[in-house]
Amino acid sequence: MKQRTIKTTYSFEGKGLHTGCFSHMTLKPAPADTGVVFVRTDLGLEVQALACNVSSTSRSTTISKGKASVSTIEHLMSALTGLGIDNVYVEIDNKEVPILDGSARQYVEAIAEDGLLEQDSERRWVEFDKEVEIRNENTGSYVRIIPSDEPGYEVTIDFNSKVLGIQTVTWNIVDGDYAEQVAPCRTFCFFHEIQLLATLGLVKGGDVENAIVVVEKPVSDKQIARMARRFNQPELKVTPEGYFSNLTLRFPDECGRHKLLDLIGDLRLAGGFLKAKVIAYKPGHSINTRAAKKIETKR
Figure 1 (cartoon, rainbow, N blue to C red):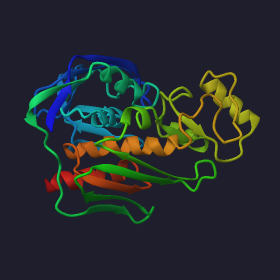
Figure 2: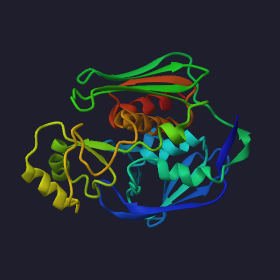
Figure 3: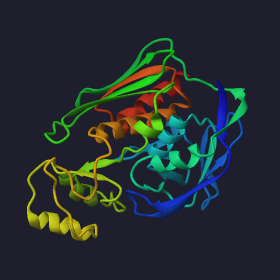
Figure 4: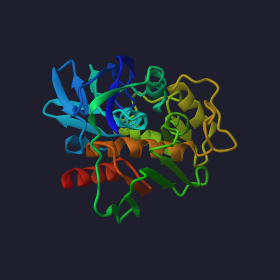
């Protein structure tokens, strides 16, 4: 398989989920063997999208080099992987990627319309001679990477939640329909987490248009009214299924699919496309990027 880049430039803009900072971002074609490079145009500095540059995994994935950082890169990285893009420059004028609608759909819809540019060099697969596994003994989560000529992913989430239940989702990199089955799936959080996240200085750009809010515990009308005012959403209710009423799920297991989306993006930081079957239980940015770092150091 040959390497690929995009045929033209694509621009996106909006606020970051956690910082609330507004940014303009442009994707540009890149030569073969470039990989994914973020360019902080406001600083004149570059950061390669590699696991060795991961500096934070607090509710999102951040890469840094020197004074330059770019956060919440996982949705874009996932879209690039799902579309089969090897090389691209990502120019951005602030420190966080726009959250858009909380999924990877807008990236995919923009790029897929034009198709990709095939390049002369062969794709550099990340190959394995034996199984690799990263575990978190405290949470029971793991990421297991098994050598395979049929690359794919299987993700299981289990939040001990009566709303979400246990969800298992899969995607095959060769013939799976990323654009339809993975890209549209939005980020999510629990209602009882929002106050804590705000205290930690996160979700400054969050609203009910870019995240699914799961209401796991009983809430009062006063709490809902306070949240409605915060998000400027006057008609906010809790559905019988246990979600805020501002949006409709795109899939019954959309939250599980979003964790798959995140995992695909985080593992791309290993430096390329994995020739492996990835099985993950209760994945998150921390364990995902730990796995990517372990892979990267073995290359």
